[in-house]
Length: 183
Image (cartoon, rainbow, N blue to C red; front, side, top):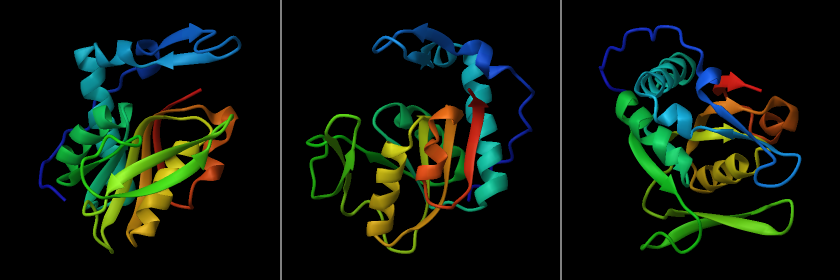
């Protein structure tokens, strides 16, 4: 873990920086849009610093942060930097140039697939999975399977937003889950 000493982030209402977009991507869905948070310098800094602080307190040491395409890259990379860890992108099929580990997972209609380079992780590494949001938990659970296939120690999950009513955390392995905003 890095020896960076972060100050405790001053309190900020992140929910006020997240825009609600009704009926997107289809009727009946309330989309939580983080682009308004990302465009606010103080809000972005607060989100990264708060996620870093909570992860340090919760999971102690991390060797790698895995971020899922694509918003997991936005938060995972600076978090890895702050934690003194490496960053590993988890991508949709066909995006990584080398040999990959892959996992398929169920969607509402059909399946999807996630991939990670075969040489990205080494057995026994301590891994934190990060994304912008947890809803039903399918993508995060699939990423956890990738980590476990390689024989790594999954130490936790970090999310900016959790949609509690969708029950995503119940789909995940029993490790710490850090969130900043709940709906």
